Image (cartoon, rainbow, N blue to C red; front, side, top):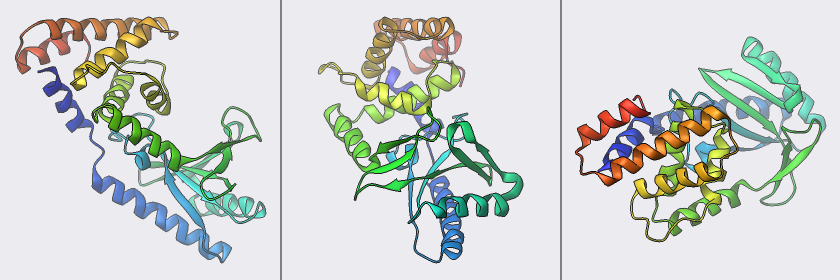
Length: 253
């Protein structure tokens, strides 16, 4: 029965298809304008949680942004692109030099412009947020394939679990960045006897509780939520009773 409640949450935090279409249209306009500037066809990719299918609604995720990888043909074009976007979007353009990042605030969406190099057909080098003037290698195709492999191995519950954990992370600080939620969920090995989203959430929270290196507030919230779900699992309660217990204990939705 707790799965019914979790599915209600998933329906409320669902990243809508029309939003994805709007975002892709925005990115296409940016790409078109850059191709006019550079006079060649530019390689670009929508990456991040939208690409992987793990995004939740923008009004729920306070850290929501759109990861847009742009791959110019040469290093000189990096500066051209940056200067062009800064001039074109003026007040809606901002940057964080210490993170090697530039952003555009476009139609209420934060577009994270990632200027990267192509290493081969599937590997790219992008700025390292943790080290100025450094680059790290990524393979976003492989990341997505790994996600869906783990999803199939776990009865198609992991993507739902990721979204629920992103939601809880926004309700209560678990000290996670959005991508860290995904990495943590995928890094765990789950019991083969799990047969519901509740089982997966319960086991994941138990792992967090037992291996917690987070803030005191995050630790307390993790323990309280895990304990609440444990009590619900033991009882025979209907959906309205579950909602009231959850409302009283941890989630206000």
